Amino acid sequence: METAESDQQTIFNHLIKVGAKTIFGKDHDFTGIKNYEDFKKQVPIRDYEAIKPYIEKIKQGAHNVLWKGQPLYLSKTSGTTSGVKYIPITKDSIPNHIITARNALLCYMAETGNSKFADGKLIFLSGSPDLERVGGIPTGRLSGIVNHHIPKYLRANQLPSFTTNCIDEWEEKLDQIADETINQNMTLISGIPPWMQMYFDRLIEKSGKKVGELFPNFNLMVQGGVNFEPYKAKLFESIGRKIDCIELFPASEGFFAFQDSQKETGLLLNTNSGIFFEFVPADEIFNENPTRLTLKEVHIGENYALIINSNAGLWGYNIGDTIKFVSTNPYRIIITGRTKHFISAFGEHVITEEVEAALLQAAADENILITEFTVAPKISIDAGKSYHEWFIEFENIPTGINIFSKKIDDNLRKKNVYYNDLVGGNILQQLKITPIKKNGFIDYMKSIGKLGGQYKVPRLSNDRKIAEALEKLGAY
Image (cartoon, rainbow, N blue to C red; front, top):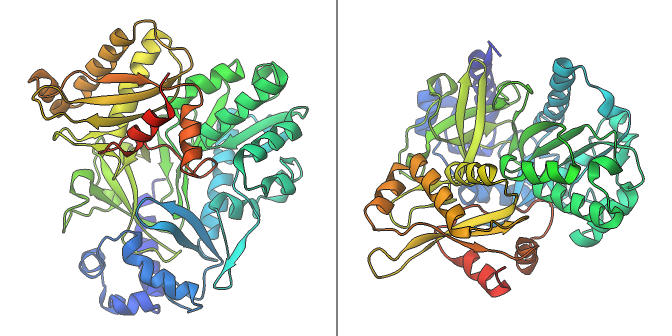
């Protein structure tokens, strides 16, 4: 990746050249853009709401709107404020999704020499590949779209069946997947960690065996969509042994990074795949004119909001994720959270990375397995009575819950100076844990119609919406 910076410049130049012939390019005077400084003046950072008028034109059949021609697909994804979002995938951008997944596997094989995962059955826990049409364009979940592009050399061993993959109701689909795979020689399992855990739970329930005993040749797990660390211990416990893992960073908007080494920390940024990246200091992302940096301007350890410009026709697009660089030679990142998922009800600005690390450290110390969790502020009008409330579904609940909560609190105070000052100054109490009953988070996601593949429980909320829903469903 020695050419990462020059690759980014080449991509930038190509994007501007092609984009100049689009409706968006004409609206933003792309012909007058000579360099990145010009681009920043012409193209503001935007979210889906700001790009939605252009998407509506595409849905009405217009050509050359955000990129040349029409998209090959529209990827349907859920937005917190926008309802359903339709993200274009073009002829030029589809290789980014397909080739990056291939490259992740090739890097793994080159480093480890292990290709045994290709000898048995493979499962990609995905959305339905049955696509609808919106404005004449095939439309569906990203994982369902990508399912149509799985290479022939992998498709022969792919499970589950097409019919099962098309089942919409998640629990029915999961049950059918378990039945189809339980007697197979599964060697690779891929999906979002909470889905994989649900799948493993169903297999254990049906067979009475650990997953590793059921599938003795299962030797590679591929996951993405959320931070793997909070789920890792319980997944390995369900398998009964540790196996190799490859972490990915895919989204409807693009395939941004992948784990290229079992020995190094972080995911390799995909700097030569049709995406020009920008980075905004995370605490500036909601400013009117935030600082915008290119790859060569970033620093290790700083929290950035990830902004993309791509050959899918996304321009100055805030994908909503925050990252940190752990290396700049090559450029490797870790995902730290979401721009809208934080707690700052009292000025503490606690982020996802901090709460996950604080909990995982305490759980490792006490040999506690965590299934799922979320955190919300509990605000009181009396000074010193407010606190952070942690809703945690335990696999094995700690015998001393107050001691465990103090360990998490101490860990969090070490990671966030503002939180430390608020607790130390008696403005906030020590955090409190509300244990959630088994499958409580599954019940919550089901209650809001979001059980299944593409949905994830937010780690942090700045309000009590999720907290109140969990309280109604009942605690431990």
